[in-house]
Amino acid sequence: MFGTCGKTPRELGYRMPGEWEKRRRTFMQWPVRDGKNSRTPLWPDGIEAARKGYANVAKAIAEFEELVMIAPPELLHEVKEMCGEKVEVLCLPIDDSWVRDNGPTFLLNDDQEVAAVKWRFTSYGEKYQTHYNDGKVPYHLGIFYDVPVFTSPLALEGGGIHSDGQGTILTTESALLTGSRNSRFTKEEVTNLLEEYLGGEQVIWLKSGLYGDLTDGHVDNTACFVRPGVIIIQACYDEKDPDYEIFQENMKILKEFKDRSSGLPFEIIEIEKPPIRYYDGQLLTLSYINYLPVTGAVIVPTFGGDAEETDKKALEAIQKAYPDRKVVPIDGMPIIIGGGCVHCITQQMPYGKSF
Image 1 (cartoon, rainbow, N blue to C red):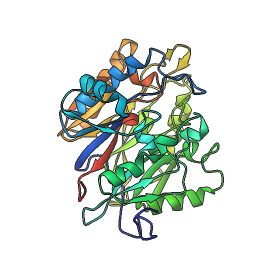
Image 2: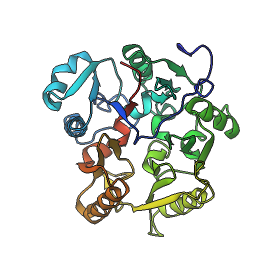
Image 3: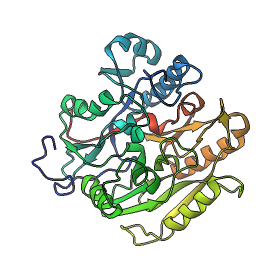
Image 4: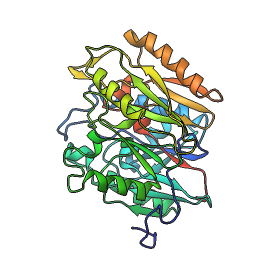
């Protein structure tokens, strides 16, 4: 651990806040990897198209709250030119552009003190060859913003967890318990570690995320909390779709749990998934759940084309779920062809006693 007196976050009264809680800022990482040195292709339309997509997200967020783009020094001027004056730039060495996954998970305690967790980042179970710099980002941010950093032995990415801010953690077995990530731990041990490092009291284990997800099924493509007691999930109603059985099983699991605060069953909002889409022979995991609440708004990916009808339904459902926020649609296609979307490329810091 780094600056934490050898105790876990839960022992010190920290918790992972809900994403709707008051924010200090949001982070992103600028696309730098062109796929030439990885086992899996990235940005089939070229890195310039990806950077335009990231810039659009950054500018949308910056209209509502502070946005910090992490980028290597040699790309400083490009980022400023493409993202505009409202976007701040923090120069750090990075390997990739998915700060949700390699960045810190921020915590908060009752005294409004901010801390962070650095997970053991393995680049999705060693799928990619280079991730040394990305794994150091949590420490860099901890030093720069004067935030203590807890180092967890768990191998996971930030897109693999959601929190209701009151002790319930949502995750998937497929992303945390399969492959090479945490094979040395039992499910019970992983559950205990999640609770210790996120201030949790209850972990809901969904079986799997979306079919074909390159992350092995991150929960942030599947389901998330809208507020305590309310969960929104991407629904699949086509029995021929591989996501149908996954959806049915995950719904069954969610209905077995209750909100800890009220003791009532969770209210579950269903958002119909977009039509199946391939790009350059690769199945795309299109998801409306991969949205980001920001201060006064919700940034929601849309996909156009044959998804126009489900785009419209999703925007309406999310607006109903967040009646006091402005819903801002953003073209998700330039990002999803690289394997993720709006939530995957962002990481929020809660408002509290920090720089």
